[in-house]
Image 1 (spheres, rainbow, N blue to C red):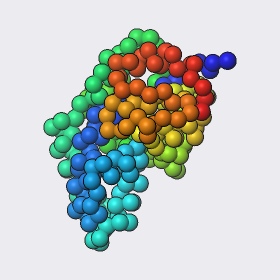
Image 2: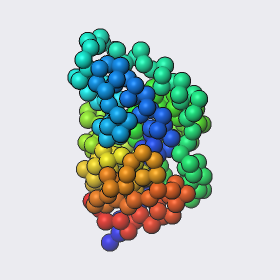
Image 3: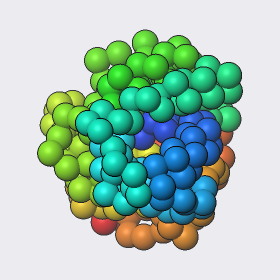
Image 4: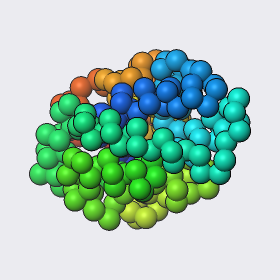
Length: 225
């Protein structure tokens, strides 16, 4: 029998906010500055969907120059500047969220970003009020994506069985985390991530946020991973 969807769990960067397109260019600049040159494409493959702590640890491990504790803070202004100038919601997502709210769909955010970054980025779009009290960060769990910890934590906090959750993700690490958590997922490939990175059991692909309400309405028919 189909398992009804009781909770939709949204990733943030690349799903709610068009932030990854901006961040990866800064990531590549930071990597080059610490002596580990990476193309934007390599940054996308290695880090999109992973936590900030994971990325900074990897950069520190591969750096060709000594890095002091807290070294990454000296680059924060680069992200802040580009977000202040260009950050916007993913095309079509505000309308999709309004539709879900009218339909009474329960939802939350579970992001690899820190709470500090979420306040800075979501705060520029007015979305925090939409998800007030329902924003979860990888800072709150032992292991970030692709481990299932964050999604399981969000489900537990919201009082919903994992099998009744639907994750909306745009990264291969995110859909892997959803599958590991026993959750179905919608894989958005309208941004940086190619669809074949997201394909797999329990995942339906889409590339237009305007289609999201209809996909959520029909997601009960998705097989569990």
